Length: 344
Image 1 (cartoon, rainbow, N blue to C red):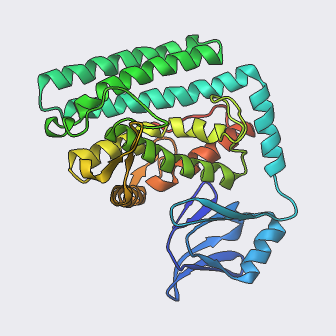
Image 2 (cartoon, rainbow, N blue to C red):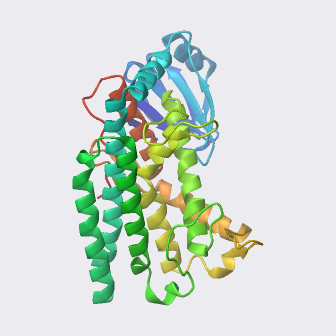
């Protein structure tokens, strides 16, 4: 459990929150583990089976303090909102920003910059750990070109141009990604380019599955802060498409999904036998493979790091929530710019 940006996140299963005077007490196995002044909190986010006393629930509703429930994997389940809240104002701000061409372009540019910078970090880390000069040179060269692409982003005067820069950089990144794999596993996981709907090889199947997990977390994070996950800035709006969740996903693809995929295959935790080939050439994770990946992803989310902007120790699983709150603060004009998550 932790307090970040005036939000209390409770991730301890079976915790019980109760009101004590003007404070919130978090009880675990009848022992007080945390006590926070109520006026410091703007929202409570509860994972898995976390209970609240009726008195605390009523007080949150009366004060207009939101309470959000997520399941164990972080998927949004429900939200309690009091009679007065700022969500409609936040959504109005989101709609205005989406209708403002320059504003939408600026947000989309920040998200693409975060994506390219984090992709570059994966290659630079791979270069430091490379066993051969050829692999190292491949990754260093690609990282330099990505740095050039990042510097070109301010030149994009339309969303289509920006998407073109992003597409070119993504192709280069994926072409270089096999160099991050250890040589013995490259034959087991041949990968030349990104393919999806359906994935045509095991590595594409693995990262597609991980992207889906991270996307679900991004969508939950946006729902938690009261943003509409359907209205994005980089991704075009289509019926049923979570455009804003896809926007937020961009800055997390490399650090949360690609790096985990590479770790799983380099360590031999995922094997070719964890995939099934279907008619038509599709390759998908089987039940055993999905269980391995989900377990690894949940364990990864429990690890902590220091958020580069907030300078607070943060469970990795809460990173999408923090970025969603930073985005909400920007849309409310509480801060002058949206800063994407930048992996160190």
